[in-house]
Image (tube, rainbow over all chains, first blue to last red; front, side, top):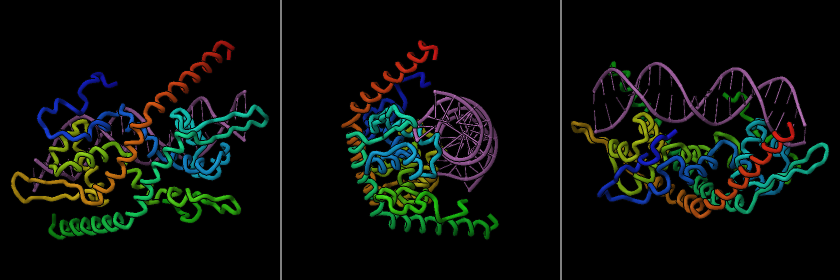
Length: 150
Length: 150
DNA sequence: CCGTATCCTTTCGGATACTG
DNA sequence: CAGTATCCGAAAGGATACGG
C-alpha cells in the first residue's frame, strides 16, 4: 500500500509559518504514531502496569485482567515483546511455565506514561464539566430545532 | 450494556499484594482510558498540535492534514470540543466562518503529551533494534520448523 | 499451562452526495 | 465554507475449539 512514499501530508509547505508539529506525527509509519498506537490499544497499558510491579505468568495476567480474552492477551504480549518492552522466559517444564517481566525500556515507558495518567487525574473534573456543558448546549439545540418544526 | 456494574475486572482480590495500577485503567468508563483513546485516535493529536500553534479554520485544518476526510475532521473536532480541549467559534457571516482554537486545557494536554513524544524519539532506536532481534529470532523458528518437517 | 486457529460481530474510518 | 447523512470495506477484538 501507499504507492507514493513521498507526499502524504506534508506537501510542499512553501512559506508557511511551519511549526515542528509534523516532524513526529505526519505519517503512519512514524515511530511516534506506532508507539502511541501501542500505548493506547485496549490492553497494553494494563499489562505494563501490572508487570511494572513484578514478574508474572500468563495465567496470572489473564486472571488479573480478566476482561481480556486469551487471544488478546497473547497478541498484546507478543507486540510488547517485539517492541522490547517485555521479556518472555519459557521454562522447559511440564506443565509449561512462562514468565513475563518488564525490560528497562518497558519500565521507562511506563514511567513516562504516568505523567499522562497524573494529568488526566488532575483534570478529569474539568473534562467532565466541559462534557456536561457541551451535552447540555447540544440538547438545547435539538429541542429548538424540534420546536421550530426544523 | 454492562448489565452488572459491579464486578468487571477487579473481582474480589482478597489477599493479593495489590498495587495501584488498577485505580486508573481497569474499566472502560475510567477517565484515563477515555483520554487515552482520544489521544491515540488517528487524528486528534495532529489537530491539537496544529492548533497549539495558532487558531485555524476548518478548511485550513483540512488542507494541512489532508489525509483526513471531511467526516473525520468534523468528528475529531467535535470530540475535542466536547472534552473541552478545543473552542469552536462560529462567525455569523456569509460565507460562514468557523474558528477553532485550543483551550488552556487543550494546551496543557499537548504539553503533557510532548513528554511521550520526546521519550519515543529518544528510544526509537532501541525499539527498532528490539524488533529486528525479534523478527530475526522468529524467522529462524519458522525455518527450523519447516526443516524439521514440523 | 500456554498458547494457536477459526469464525463472527462490532467498530472505525474513507468515499460520496447533499444542505444552509 | 462548513458541515450532515448514508453507505461500505477494513480492521479490531471476542468466543470458541483445538494442540503441544
